[in-house]
Length: 287
Image (cartoon, rainbow, N blue to C red; front, side, top):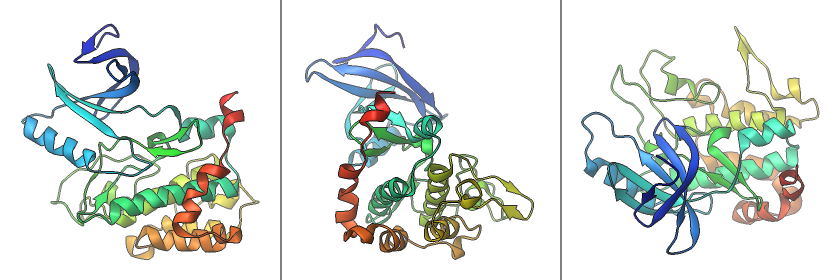
């Protein structure tokens, strides 16, 4: 799409990137005078407009401060989803520039991610995000986090048919998503918590956890100052067997706030809301 093109009332400005589910553009809603993100959806072979409308409705009905708002769905020589434009930097790029973050900030960010995962997992029909990773987490200019790119998300399913395939991100996806146990691919709440643990590991170390036969490097290998409590949380999230992990996001939040957040006398929602006051990125964005 040429940057001079228009899409209805939206003036296309530039390309924001391309992923497995489609290309994304920065555009201006000239009627309301605001920037938006326009995602061109790639239609798979045999897919209908009805399927795309259902997916758009699925995203439209998700309401959480850490999720981009869906504004519109258009069909003009293809399908386009118009969403809130999230201005910021991916967590991946943030860590690449900073090296890592301190434990207190990592706890705050982990709590924010747990809050949105809990929201998704506890819906009437639970939603499994299935692709939590630093590239899909935006650090906004005002210090908030946003979870973006729901291309891999799906309704809760403990098992798919044998031989089925699921897109996954190496280094962050749980073993059951990669089909490494010989039982076919599948994902549930514990799969998202595995990815959360890997993401938290990346925050405090600046490294993607590497494994050699029979051994995985603990977070303290890269960050000797890391508390034993946080390292234990990461380890439990990222155990190979789903049965050995935390079962729900609330269990992780309980340990995270009891051993970190409650030192400030806050818990649950109050602790998560405190995030926006604690994370100051002004100096970072001046770099």
